[in-house]
Length: 218
Image (cartoon, rainbow, N blue to C red; front, top):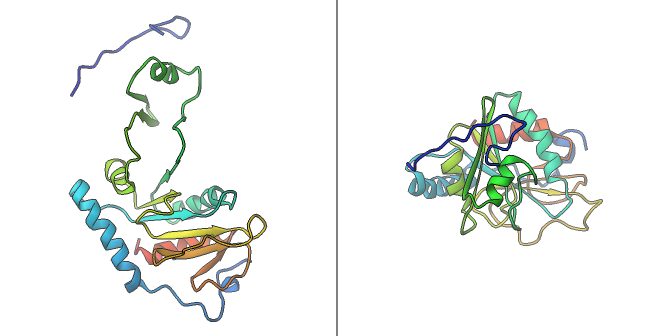
């Protein structure tokens, strides 16, 4: 552990200054085959074991084109899982330069001064910003920081290893993502589409929460 030095000062001084799931299911649509997705989850767990030596919580990635409603869906889905006593962790995958702090705040000033790791610690939360020299793989992020949750939901990582739920909004795009593969678990949409997967309405967070609980045996 590196040496730790605390700087104290007061605030005035510069101290070193569709409506249900069934409504949106097509007649030919298959139910989820748990045996088919099990290898995906086990493969992810095997990779995670190599990283952390421990089993990780299930991971599901919410993906879709820009402005499809991914964040809005998460804002509805997380409370629906919370009331079902599921502890949720989330990860936003950002492909551009990292910029999370607020300019002018103390932690921002620390970082601008050259600190490689900056933490904001309080009785109700802990936030850490640190430099990286690479895009850290999803399973490594989860193994480091998400050991006390029941389910990790990512926004993004459409090329990652986790099972995926695609959000498609017909008012914003003509068609869903191309090159769908076996990692797709379900679709969420404002349209009734023949996708061969369980299909949920944009506002059916409760149905999607129940689906995730059943799929991952939470």
